[in-house]
Length: 79
Image (cartoon, rainbow, N blue to C red; front, side, top):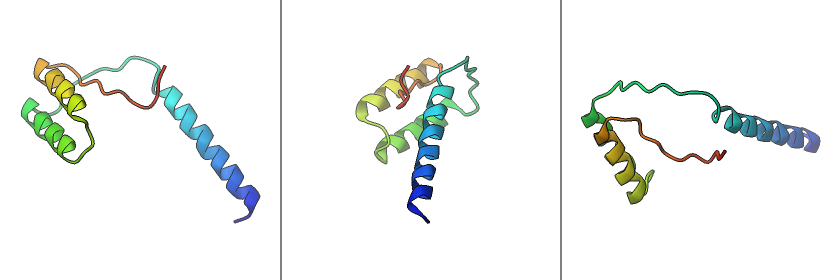
């Protein structure tokens, strides 16, 4: 692939990534629990054990699951 094509591809990926981030910060989100609380807790523990969540994130999410609401995890996209 030529040098110019690589630059064009990188610019397109960057633009898509930035627009995707902005897209997810808009609108309302409805929450419906499709699994049991037990299954969510098992999945959460598994994610922590695999290093996907810190201890702090794990404890916060566990508390939110036990409270019956949606779990809010910070993403890389900031408002």
